[in-house]
Image 1: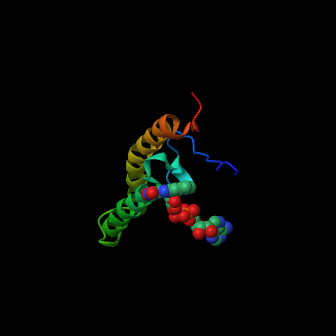
Image 2: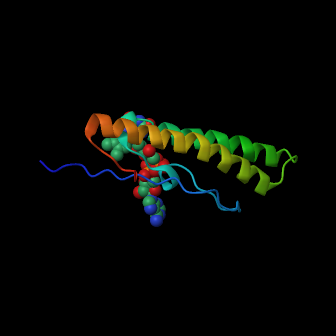
Length: 99
Ligand SMILES: Cc1cc2nc3c(=O)[nH]c(=O)nc-3n(C[C@H](O)[C@H](O)[C@H](O)COP(=O)(O)OP(=O)(O)OC[C@H]3O[C@@H](n4cnc5c(N)ncnc54)[C@H](O)[C@@H]3O)c2cc1C
């Protein structure tokens, strides 16, 4: 039987917000050991959706909304990513992040 290869994104520093953003595995692919990758992607959709609603309501500039989404996403998603890596190491011997 062939082993399943798992790779993980590595958390990166904040970047300049623009009209282009990222969500889901495109920015925080993580070990499946915790089973929260898709859940985190759904949280992205909810968080970004709330921000875009504030833009549509007319009260918020788009770039501020994207910046708020990205800041929140980096906080919870990188935490999830690190927790997944930690559990992955314990449970399936998977250490995707550099020490
Ligand atoms: C073994 C395993 C078990 C997992 N178990 C869980 C679990 O129990 N719970 C949980 O929450 N998460 C789990 N996950 C993680 C979860 O599968 C991912 O986090 C989730 O699918 C990410 O969703 P996404 O939409 O960001 O990316 P994806 O699901 O990868 O979707 C991206 C889509 O974009 C398409 N695409 C790619 N390139 C292009 C292109 N150039 N043009 C057009 N389309 C393109 C792809 O075909 C794909 O359909 C698991 C992952 C693995 C590997």
